[in-house]
Image (cartoon, rainbow, N blue to C red):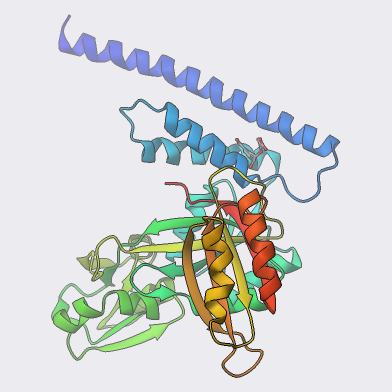
Length: 361
Ligand SMILES: C=C(O[C@@H]1C=C(C(=O)O)C=C[C@H]1O)C(=O)O
């Protein structure tokens, strides 16, 4: 067989496979519509998004995958397939910390795919408010960065909001120096979110010493400003560079490689257990010696792994703290529920912010 004939044959087989894939994704869509019909018949409250079921689907796909496509790639493809199927059931509205081009937008797409209506909002407060009011089904907010620590504002919003955590997203963050200038020497000012500036502090100190750094509301906003101003640059994502027609003067300028940001998905109701979950809670107690140790002791006794502990002023009294704790397990798991009950006896306040499936790939 000539090479040309062979190529034509293989392409014909690809066409046949595409037809099967098309029929199968539409079959999947019809089944999702059937699920929606059953949910409606049972008078289910709220929306049809089921993060725990989506997690189960993705984990199963990953365990079945034999390649050559990587687990990460098949996860991304099936995430989009589910997103399209969910959109057939009901279009979801999801608010994220905008403007367009922020890492939070990338996190929202990673969690929900392109089938949802993503709405950029200007502040973390606004996201909480819109979800509380029911104008948005869900919101996506940054909560901690592996280089720079917590996003205090998100934790503070939880102190006063009744919303629950329904999911978490982890995203590798690559920062770039974005500008319409083509020479580093032309840069007089660098815009970014304060976390972006902090993540690249070492690089900026050595490559752009003495250049003014201006913190703004988001990396997307920084890119927008840099696009309008001569001699300006932004520390921002690839997506922001494309969005605002900038070029990358330098790529991957974060000081610590493996820089990861964790985002929370907020909604009105946490999902049921999947067997691989996390729980977030806020707890406080009046000051007394050994207070924190005895508060945490039930977790150790019930063999529960704590993955995060942050202290924030509780805003109730001077030097009173609220402790934000993440632990492995679901609040409905026997061990976790026993430990929480014991902690509650010692605490002046304990609120479970939510239990949710651990971040997917
Ligand atoms: C189909 C369902 O509804 C939605 C769509 C899903 C999917 O396409 O697999 C999974 C969970 C839900 O977000 C379901 O609940 O099973």
